[in-house]
Image 1 (tube, one colour):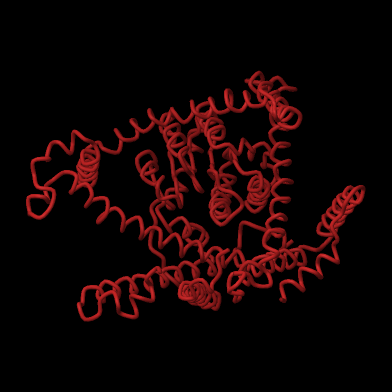
Image 2 (cartoon, rainbow over the protein chains, first blue to last red):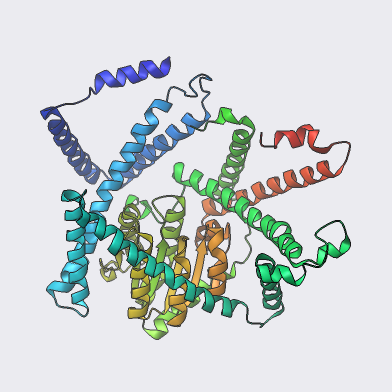
Length: 272
Length: 260
């Protein structure tokens, strides 16, 4: 009920634009952004810090409140749920702005390289051409073979080629990891050997004559030892790391939400 | 849509854990001293920066595929400390980024870190750059940087997936000293195999407290440890409950934590 009222209120305050009003709305929004940007720049450091902390807190509070407030069992929604997609769209719009900055960074660095003919400038030309061709293909020729071919035949093939190099890197990393240099490395090597043998047919064949279960001899089957290592030794360790990461993530999220994180962001400027 | 009312027990537990962390932060801010154990991977940061100075080659910092979230911001906090140290020694740094939102913050953090080190004039706007948000395009770009620049030191902190081994092995092949940390447990074995030091699990989130010794962060870190003790106690009580036949899985405590 509350949800509907709020939704109606916001709907009447910001009616859906159509026709030329869409462009006027976009223009007004862009103008508003420029005004906010210059207003933020004009604010003194401490006031800016307070404003950023307040916006961060309110944004976090929105999601926390939406999660914790009781919901209507019929709709599984509370009075904030309807706004979740809108807030998500705001984040998407911000991300779109930053993508533009990212592309600008690429063009600036590689453009300078080409203009000053620095070492490897030919590669930068290819990159810049790639950006232009891909952008034009995506914007103007989306349903054509040209566009599909660029993505499927060129980009995906490059991705696959890069992914394939992993096979070689895994071998060199495994060689380094399994070199018997210490007691731990030896243990690691034997554990890895058993797990690998337990997963492949030839490894399972080595001890296939032992009973699968129901007898002590079954404990010596390679596939059983392999499963034991994975389920009884490996899984709890991974879960323990997961618990620590979850709690660590919660702690840092609390610090960011309440603007308690010091040092890296805003602080130096705010103290000016 | 997920809500607390779907499972009040979990929501209460999250609220309790958050309250513990907040309590220890407040006590730390009020002057209580906390001790934290030594973390070799984080001690190695200064050594790795020093090596880059001796070799006169750049330091590479990669936040992986992290976006503008908890993991990415934590990576930038660690990098901020590294940059301040590197700025004092006049090292060249490089930070390729895969997420455009993180890139904008990273640029700001690098600039601020140089200013905080008293060397704002050493900041090079080309040191932080956006490469690509496609996983393997980013991987090939970073690997290319490692080979071309023959980086002396490589710091890999953030979200890493299949590309982790490409970075770590590329660093190995140019003889870089490598320190890595990720929250992706599936990538930890690759980092352990290929890097000199690996930060495991929640050590990743402990890094900023360990490096800065700032009371708020130390308090938060100790709060995390109290939370882990609480979770451990829950597990122990659960194990004992399941072991005693009279209690078993119908025991209220076990039922409370059982997924339905």
